[in-house]
Length: 348
Ligand SMILES: CC(C)(COP(=O)(O)OP(=O)(O)OC[C@H]1O[C@@H](n2cnc3c(N)ncnc32)[C@H](O)[C@@H]1OP(=O)(O)O)[C@@H](O)C(=O)NCCC(=O)NCCS
Image (cartoon, rainbow, N blue to C red; front, side, top):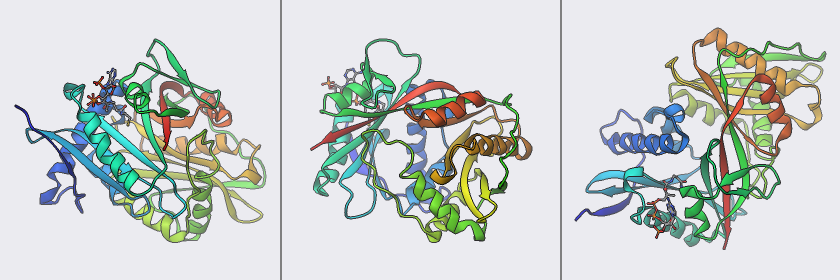
């Protein structure tokens, strides 16, 4: 008779430490589950790339693993934004395809839901990922944009617990090298690019831009509170990114008259050229919109990628399905939809 245990996983200080074995194994299982859902290992990350998110004190999380006969077969995550006014928690449950429909998902879910309820959270939220080529009945986003297949295991799992869809995103892929050429900047603006940590004199600007990233993109019916960013938090984030072995390429747009940054975009580039690049944040501040700065800055950063780290097969990006401006920019560059992540919520 096989034995199921669920335990909290201790986050190691480094993946090279003697006690990092479970974290390394958890990453392998995570990647396998994601590949089963997404249809490829394109989104897989190394333990070293995954670790910083778990060490980020600004975004605290707890990680649990399910073991059957001492082998990790699933995991669950509890995460909540910091701040007294935060009412919601994010729960994530994943079970290896070989071990599904035996109640392991339910047991993992109960573990992390109990934490959220114990902390007094009144909204529970979760993500699912769905391939773009799934057929069958669909569930529409309450935003009026996008839908997800309602028979997918993740959707059924959440529906059976009373969750409703809060938003649908689009996961898009751009094959490299991209055909789109760079565009000139409108007058009054110029570009600044850097690799790695934010230059000291731009920390304050990046704090403003990162805070805008938490409020400006459409949220649908997702509960998300504005994030607090200052120079120190930008420094902390940069320091974590430095540890993970990917190259972070940033291009920003400077508004020349004020010498302040009006927008930025960044790419996370793995060391191995055969692996995909991830598009992270892209934002143009409200007062500077309507000048095609979003498109120009993205194309400029893609050009930097080809210059500094050529040979990667593609770039992945994620956007709200109702974020028509950003999707238009991405379609113009050549991104194609490959998946639809869903955000779900349960109001207790
Ligand atoms: C969703 C997931 C966690 C379920 O894991 P699991 O171990 O199979 O879950 P359980 O055995 O505890 O099933 C619990 C219930 O979910 C529903 N469910 C799960 N998989 C299902 C499927 N393929 N078809 C129909 N219902 C399903 C059922 O209601 C099931 O109860 P039942 O087996 O008594 O009918 C797993 O399929 C998975 O990892 N999917 C990818 C990640 C994901 O989408 N997570 C959910 C969002 S956080």
